[in-house]
Each structure stands twice: as structure tokens, then as C-alpha cells.
Length: 299
Image 1 (cartoon, rainbow, N blue to C red):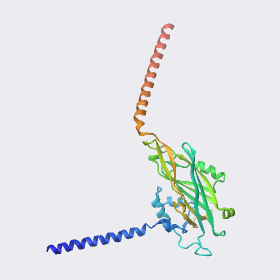
Image 2: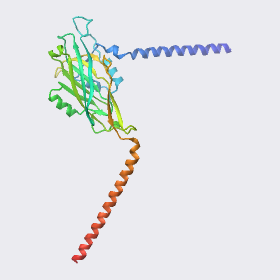
Image 3: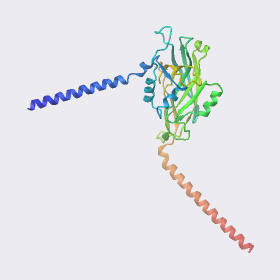
Image 4: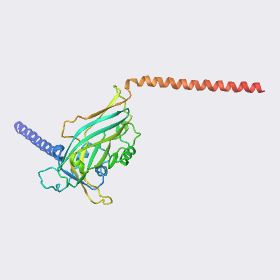
């Protein structure tokens, strides 16, 4: 009797292990390496902006949800080329840096774009900058740059409330469109400057809050046709949040209040408030005495 019970327990354990290993294999299949999956793949969208299509389904920016969104937008057919073994285009980031001082900085990016088919239907480079928490881009400032032809098109999505502090805000994303001209097929280098602003940071012991900028998402898209909402736009995926070179992430150390100074600031603020109230009280008393003396002299 005891041996049969022991055999039943062993069999039950074996079945549970088999089920868990099968489920883990299935999970591993669903979450395959997105870098390998997206190389030279294409997505099809019906909106002018890629992020516009994303935010019609999702309410906030999340990296894993964004990757899943791109998986669902894959085109059923491949990119038509003369040779199916040749990738239409490749790209890598040559230079990326933060410049400026204070809470207003510029994110400068230089992209090397290699187009292998000059007759390709892809005529627009789309850069998607998924900004970290604590940083935002001013839509009005970007519109001014667009009017000066720094970009062919640009838009901000996500949390666009510029007044919220860092701990109350959500992430935002900037989508930049740059037209590809004939000279880009020869030179292949595209540089742009993205003005950024720091939000009010939470308190920190070091006095600084570090934000990290990952590499942008790069797409090569066909031209958008105005007033044709049903026409799906094809975009070649060049890279998703990475580069084919070992470019390091860009960091910005934003000044923040030191947590250890809160007691001193509170005490100083309280003392200043008491002194101000006492000064107002003394001034009102002296003013009333002066008025009473003046009335006595007149009488």
C-alpha cells in the first residue's frame, strides 16, 4: 500500500514537471529575440504616425507593449526587391550626445543610412525617440523647428502635460520624419537635434537624478498620402531600440533636491514665515498708533 502511494506521488511530480517545462517552452517561443525578428522586416500602418496607431490601442508607453504592437503590424507580404537576398537598407548610429546646460538640453544624433536600392519606395526616415521618465519635449518648440524645415514632420505622443513633476508624469515619445532625397543615397548621413527639458525631479541623496536615453527606433517608410486614411503605409524596420554598433547609452544627470536637506529647508521656511508674520503684526500696530496720535493732534 505504501509503495503504491509512493509511486503515485512520483508519477504526479513527473507530470507536473512535464507540464511546467512545456509551458516554459511555449513562453520562450512567444518572447523570442526581437532583434533577430525585426531585422529587415516590414510593418504596415494606416495612420500618418506609427505612434498614432500605437496610442489608439494603448493608453501609455510601455516598451514590451510597443514591441508586441509592432509584431501585430507586420505586413503579410515581403518587400518587393530585385533580389530577395539583398536587404533594401541598413543603418547604424554614428554619434549620439547630450549638449547644453541647466534643465534645457539638446539630444544630438547622427545616423548612417545605407540604401541599396535608389528606386526603393521608401522615401522617409522615421525616428521614434522613446523618452525616459523625467524628460519631455515641448510640442510648440518642435513645431517651430518643423517650420524651419529641420524635420519634414514631427509629433509628440504620450504624456504631454509639461507642468507635472517627474513622479506624477508618464513617459512620452517623439516621432520625427525626415525626407530621404537623392543625395542621401550617396552621403547616407542624417543628423538632427532634439530639444529636451527636465521635469522637477524627486529628492535624492546624491542631489542628482540620472536619466538614461536608449537608442531610437528607426524605420524607413513609404510616403504618406494625404486624405487617404484607408491606404496602409509600409515601413521597413531598421532597428528597434538598439544599434548595430556598440554605442553606449546617453546619460543626463538632472539636479534634484537632496533628501538630507529637507529638515533644514523646513526649519528655515518656518522661521521665515514666523518672522514675516511678526513683521506684519508690528507694522500694523505701529500704523494704528500713528493714526491714533494724528487724530489726537487734530482734535
